[in-house]
Amino acid sequence: MRSLAILGSTGSIGTSTLEVVRAHPDLLSVRALAAGRNRDLLRAQCEAYRPRCVSVGSREDADWLRSSLSYLPQLHWGEEGLRACALHPDADTVVAAIVGSAGLASTEAALRAGRRVCVANKESLVVGGALMHEAALAGGGELLPVDSEHAALHQLLADRDPATIREVRITASGGPFRDWPLARIQAATIDEALNHPTWKMGPKITIDSATLMNKGLEVIEASVLFGLTPDQVAVTVHPQSQVHAMVGFHDGSYQLQVCANDMKLPIQYCLLYPDKQPGPVAPYPWDTPRQWTFESPDLERFPCLALAFQALREGGTAPALLNAANEVAVAAFLQGRLGFWDIQACNQEVLSRIPASRLGSLAQVLDADQAARRHAEGWVQARA
Ligand code: MG
Image (cartoon, rainbow, N blue to C red; front, side):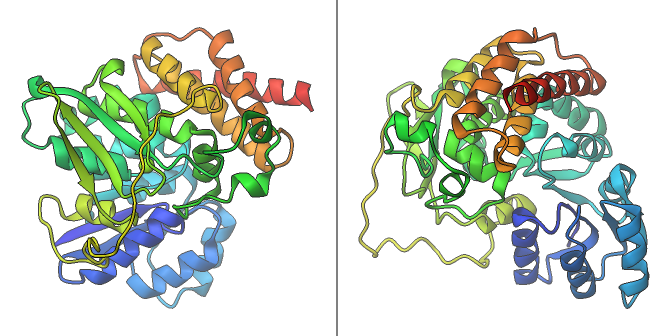
């Protein structure tokens, strides 16, 4: 039986995780839930799963939960609350699904405390991947990627001699603007960017899918997770999102991982690894006729992908700078303060103006993150 702490329980990964838990009541149980602002859904989740430890974004919401729950768990709030849930002594497995660099410290602490951490928070790997590996090594923790492409790679690369691998490829749906001409992309609206063709996800990652920044962050994530050079990671656009990743060997052959595009599959893979059990998703329907297509990404129309490769090659804090700039730019776009094309301009601005430094400590990563945010905010304000 695995006992879970779910950080980000009311988001898209968190609610899917709870569906997987519901499908395996004899294998999975919930000990801690942490959420941000969605206190109504958190309350409903608490009543359904009765976790012993609960954390919410603000003290006010923690007080509200205390008075409205039918039982009394340990109640926490804010950054300290996330930590309390991540390190709860009764939980052996942490699902790290807080969006953005806010999830960094709790992910690191859980790895250092020897937990299995199912990382859906790709930012923590992008900005501090080496530190996460270090924390896992020091504390005996185990890091499993929830991201569908990386869970696929984890399966494809298990027990493989790294010397046999020529490259890995992660697939991209291409997002809503895959076949749009450049001029139309440059003028895209918020609604158009939020209209993702194949995946239903939170707003930040949906915008990142429209710019292909999400795929760029995933390229960095793949390099960090599996110890691959920038030249060994490539992207193939595959709009049907049924092939999630491929591994290419020196002899020219490839192995592909195929499954429905449903996040419950990679989540269950990480929670039950190395077991494979029937779950909430049906086996792949091979008898349903369908066509798969593959193409190369166009870096001119999707410059954020090129910026990610640039940051990966620069190394050190460059991925942290890019990630922070992008978080600021996407938030400003969603608030109507920036145009769609300004997102890549903001990212480019920060990456070219702030020099990257060597990656030493979590504090250093957070400093780079803050410096990039300040610069990006200033750029956004000057633009408005
Ligand atoms: Mg992904």
